[in-house]
Image (cartoon, rainbow, N blue to C red; front, side, top):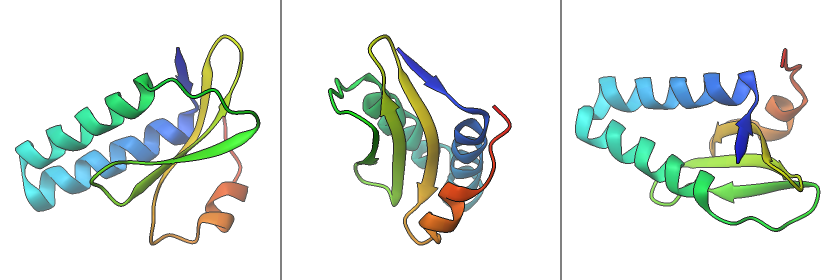
Length: 91
């Protein structure tokens, strides 16, 4: 089970909105499908990890816990990732 943080949800919303406005519904749906595939993947890794989103310039940052995956952020690869990772999260 994946439990995304509020900021991760906002990141996904921003990405899908961008692809919807710039590339159309079909591409936005492919982004959603790729995210769902990434969420469903068995990730047996300790501490903060990164998972590149296949076919799209996004990386998922997460912590794998025994009973769920704690999704921290979903960031575009051209962002200043260290700065974004340090931004406070309200959830």
